[in-house]
Length: 96
Image (cartoon, rainbow, N blue to C red; front, top):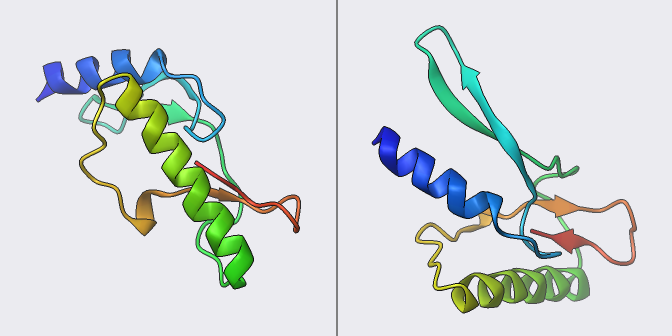
């Protein structure tokens, strides 16, 4: 399991795309010495938004998946809870 974590972190560190969350590093997390990834912070989380913005978010996630698939990476856990949204620009949300 630890080897899988490090393998995933190594792959994650090589990904650079506007619709994939940026990877910043790894830290020890908690008293048991487990590890956690440090990633880009995205404001707003889950939102109630209009149809046009939902479409933008869906397209952004599709562009991110296309990038990953182009690198022979499959997400395996794509769901709404794993999409991060930045609504700083109220007219153009950014999804990663």
